[in-house]
Amino acid sequence: SQELEQSPQSLIVQEGKNLTINCTSSKTLYGLYWYKQKYGEGLIFLMMLQKGGEEKSHEKITAKLDEKKQQSSLHITASQPSHAGIYLCGADTDGANSKLTFGKGITLSVRP
Amino acid sequence: GAVVSQHPSRVICKSGTSVKIECRSLDFQATTMFWYRQFPKQSLMLMATSNEGSKATYEQGVEKDKFLINHASLTLSTLTVTSAHPEDSSFYICSVRILDTQYFGPGTRLTVL
Image 1 (cartoon, rainbow over the protein chains, first blue to last red):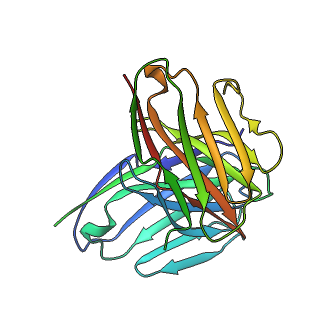
Image 2: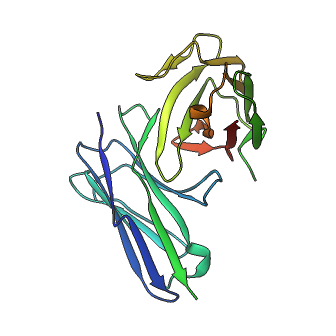
Image 3: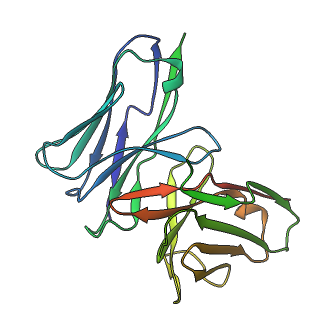
């Protein structure tokens, strides 16, 4: 089965600082999804990556998928308190863009 | 706006009762919906794939007779937790795949006393 490791487990940063979190797969990723979740709420879709070397940006968040398609990073520039939450990566497990396997998530806190 | 809705958002029930959770795709028809469960401080675990007009596909370890799934229309899937017990208390969340993206509902917090 697909195994996803997210690191670090949690992160506390000062407002305005940049940060990077990672998602590593034990197998080749057919598709990698990044979501943000507030505790007890649904998942907010951030970005989806499919091609090796692909990079996407939205506002101050940039996600990359490495060439080997086994690791993805999410970078936040000039973090704000609104960025705080749980960041989950999800992997397409069979190449059919169907069910997703998730990592355990990274809890981000941003100190004002 | 929201793509997927769930109802109810929270439910508290007594042990032994059954609870039905609805998942609706608001603007798109969905032949397939997914049901996940999330325990506190843990990740989402896929429970089952709901297929419109046919039987759901359950993941290993998920009891199909306990978690009944009905996907009667292209916009509605329901998950019924039968004879709920305290260990079934969790956050249940559904998703719909639209084009290349999976959109998630807001989730349902189930507490079984």
